[in-house]
Amino acid sequence: MKNIYLLPCLLLLTCTLPAQTDTVFISNSESSEDLTPAVFTDARNKVFKMQDPCRFLLKLNLASLLGPQELHLSGEYKLHPAFSIDAGVQAIVRDDGDWMTSWTVRAEPRWYYGISKKVKNGTQADNLSGNYLSLEYAYTRYRNKTQGNRNTLLLNWGVQRRLFNRGYFDLGFGAGMATVSSGPFNRGGRVFFARPRAAIGLAVARPKTGKSAGNYCEALRCFTEERRMWKIDFYNLLDFYKDYRYQWVSLAPNIGYEQKIAASAWSVHMEIGGLLSRAGFTVDNAGQKQTYNSHTYQTMAVLEPRWYYNLKRRIAQGKSGNSLSGTYVGVQSRWAYSYEQLGNIAPNIGDRRIKDWSLAPVWGIQHRFMRNGYVDFNIGPGLQLQQNTVTDENGEQMTSTQRNLIYLVSRLQVGMAF
Image (cartoon, rainbow, N blue to C red):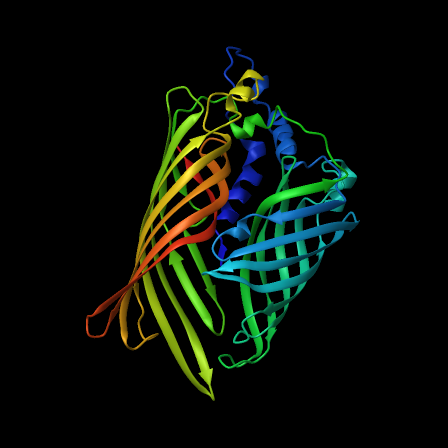
């Protein structure tokens, strides 16, 4: 699944940063020089590293750890100011309790179609940030033989930018064809499909660039004092996928509130959310097609004490105000209740109810962007208790409980903050 709401959020950040007309610094001066476009152009260069040369970028996609937890590692090497080759490996580490369910190798030549002119004009360095067209080949092999292995060829359009010294994002859309091997539950053959792509994570660049701070605080509101913050997550709001066999769509609204404890580096983060989804898959057996479907409704709540462990040091160094931005450690407790109508998937089962409790220590990073934007990512190992209650067609219930389930917490939120 790909979360498509990150695309407008970060594209908005990319496009509006030079035109931002407010500043987070407090000044008694009446001079208009503090608001000149040059200040924000410099802020954009600091945030996105537009003036830093880069010939190689090693990328770890943290967004892929959400949902089915995938590990995406890739490297991109520049062959020419306008051309590069991006290649990598992907593996689904954990999916619904199963480990290492598939792996993928991919290669992707890219054409950064506007960068040569920018390099010549001196408005951008020779690097790997820009808009591109690419042709991507990927081979996917599944451990479960009921799923057919895939050879995929996609034509992609995308936008890639570096984020500060050790980050990047890569957003876009692709369309193409996959050749799927046949199996007991799929017909195999050629499949035509389209997909969004959304990657955001860590990156190591060569040649290495020096650390820089200062003007990017215009974008990150470094010195704004914040004691509380309301947060609306857009990244996970809408999700969808469709091909010849699988299709699903989900809506997951989420609202959070974070309150600082007095003037300390401690805070309490709380959130509530829901999920409404419809899923289905089609089986083609000897020319006879049958579609199975299900509907899921979920409500959840999170309570997470946080400690911004380096906040006091950053304040003492003049790098931050007493705010809710920075790196933190916390303890995340989560409760969720799900009701699933199984439809015609299992004729003898009416519905399923799942109660889920989890507890996990997490490390995370949260930052404000401009006036009303925020991004929050955290990760850590956790323990989970899950209670499943199944109701059959006669109304009888059967309950099973799984304790001490080990899982990986990984959450990314991008949205609006107030």
